[in-house]
Amino acid sequence: MKPAILIHGPTASGKTALSIAVARKFDGEIVNADSMQVYDRLNVISARPSEEEMDGVPHHLFGHVPVATRFSTGEWLEQARTVIEDIQKREKTAVVVGGTGLYLMSLIEGLSDIPPVPEDVRHEVLEIAKADGLRGLKIRLQVVDPDAAARIDDNDRQRLTRAYEVWLATGRSLTSFQNNKTNAVLNPDEWLGVALTPPRSKLYARIDRRFEGMLMEGAMEEARALDRLGLDPELPAMKAHGMPWLTAFIRGELDAATAAENAKRDTRRYAKRQFTWIGRQFPFWPRIPSTEIATRIRVISALYREVDR
Image (tube, rainbow, N blue to C red; front, side):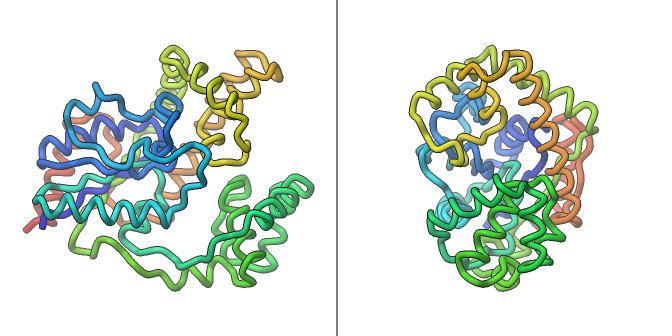
């Protein structure tokens, strides 16, 4: 069985092009590990690779989930398990790529068996966050799950909300569930993981350029189509990079320049949080600071030879 190659990195760090090059070199197939690229109708906004970019390399778990769905990490993990096992049975290399660290972590460490959170609890926590702000929500979390509160950034709405939802729904802290993980897909000797860590100034400039390119490629039209569906703004797909600000522009709440600048700013902030996640959750993964594909391939090839002995 060929070891899987896991590629993580912040948004706009060049994961797509690298993954295709890696798949070609190691006779591989690509498995998506990005929580936005799983959704349909988000071709441009999620920076999902086009058919032209895929260039004949098989891609899995891209654009297969309806945007009106709340797709969980547990669902992704079980789908990824099936796909990876199939790839390995055919003696191919699974190249798992994406910016969602929790997806990659679940592959190698398993996932906590957390019961589903009822919709009324989700709504209650959203109302708390609106009334008290994220600071107030974190203070509440510090009381019931101090470990999670210490780990989660003050501005990370999604993870703060999730941790408090779990406690409110189950009476148990998220940390207590996370300390009892099961069902890892890959054993320690069955994978190689690398983290792309390009210079931040270059990355932030690339984020800005990429968003401008997305606007030219149809991001606004994509946002208009989603807005017409009348979906719950709290759905994950409606929080894709730039989507809230594009929606605000469409509804006449912001001018185009302000919407675009806010979208770029939020994406840069998200990239900063991804760097923090890499530092905390993947401390032993080799870093590749170079932005050159040829250099990245050389590093991965050298590491792969060590794992595949």
